[in-house]
Image (cartoon, rainbow, N blue to C red; front, side, top):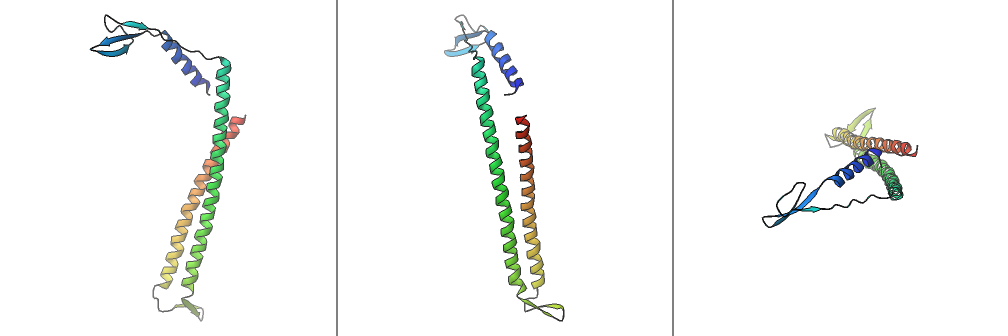
Length: 163
């Protein structure tokens, strides 16, 4: 736990422990106030528990342990996501190649010139398939890049905590 948080908590506990609190009945409702709130106001004694330093240290170690475990779980999830995204790229490439294979079988070459069969827009469809799949692959590559940035940042955080 950050020393600033501990300091803030300490100051909050100290400020609460010195404040006076009163309990009153006002219009039939029970209310609490930091000022006298009527003739029948009762001062409420607030007991503040000050934990032992050993308890604070134990809690700090426990929190650190769970934080580290959480970071390693996140690391594992990021690796799994990278694997999934790379598999997705392979699947997209196979799908693209299969679609192109079907389309490529619909034309033939004659004297170094490509000639389509009865489908007048065949070459445009081939270009569209290539463009569409390239766009999909680029989106997945962008996700991979973002995932790698998260992995780098997480690794930097883990390394910094080890020091």
